[in-house]
Image (cartoon, rainbow, N blue to C red; front, side, top):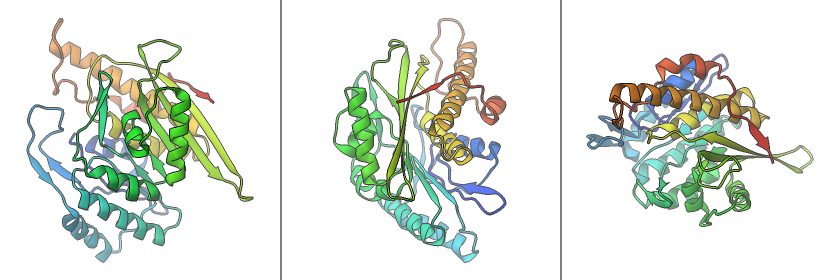
Length: 312
């Protein structure tokens, strides 16, 4: 499962859309979406391994691929999802394409996972080129409808540190003001009432009513930490959130409960399998920690709700 950025779509009869990695293409296909993909990178494996080889696509290569879709008149999309990329020109071209697609379909929903970095032991760092940040902040986020940053990425986009839940809510308001109707901070290092063994995710959905007033739904979720480093969880989260917000467009609580619960099923199955392969007392390696997607098909299709959201 290589970390890649993809596009996807939905026609009148079937849903097509864009996914962030091959495992996400699988997820949304399982959930009834017809998926078109365009890679932002073509890597031998994900970057959690010690070594990887491959290519990073630029705007010219993306334009050529999209032009092929246009020539065949199959560029009729209802959803676009983007994730990991390493080239600023590619990212800027994504914005041009999304704007063109929105001219064709004003109801198109663009889901952006602004993959830039994360925190380790309390310290944040970027794992993509730093010049992607202003492109995300100034060009991508303003045209996005749903964004799924982690805490560090939300801080980068707003220039505001998050120390408390109040800070996080204010940061989500800042992100709303930049454009997106739905903001989900997928993970944070905030303290939870349940203790240090849990992660907090926060979501906010802001909608303008017909009379011009704004309605905001906010939720908090606390999910158990899994003692391992996985690659692709952000991609998986964004893909499932796209699917479940499609099925529950006015209920962020239910959409997030299904997304996070499905993720817990996948992660628990993955760590159990990885530990069995590694053997007692041994730390699982990257290959053993590949997400168990196929084995989790039933949980992805119809997740048992094991993580509940609190409405704030």
